[in-house]
Length: 153
Image 1: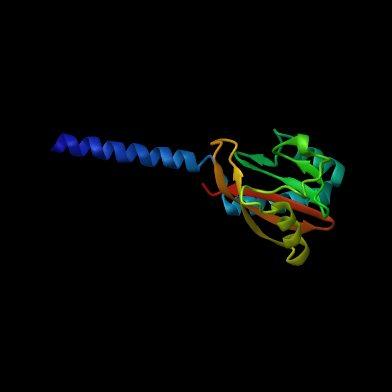
Image 2: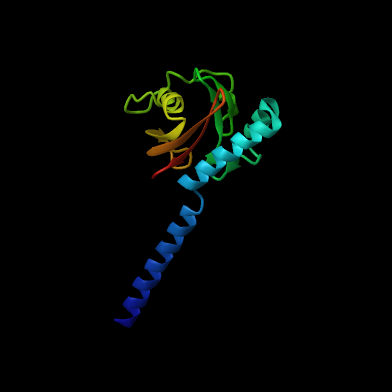
């Protein structure tokens, strides 16, 4: 019986360590907000050209685990993208999630009406390849909309 208890205890301990290590590889809501605020300050201090280059740099300071910054204009045009630089210069306004939610339009609406806030939608997780709940923090800064999202698993 003691042996069985030890095996079960060891298995539970191992599972909790794996979950902890996995959780350490994903960003939190607070980290996403902080990254958006850091990007806004960087844009203000360095100008758009330098900031957009740094934001779009996959090895730059605006990429941390699964967190990255993207910058849109008020029409949904991608100006900088830390997760996929191929999207720069493309309008994302008509992009929809699996439930037909126009989440880019929702980003722009939050920016225009509230200045900042969260938008929930469903999107493929690039790590798991599964459709997961995602929440993106949106903040309007001048004529820009700065975003950073988290997966909710």
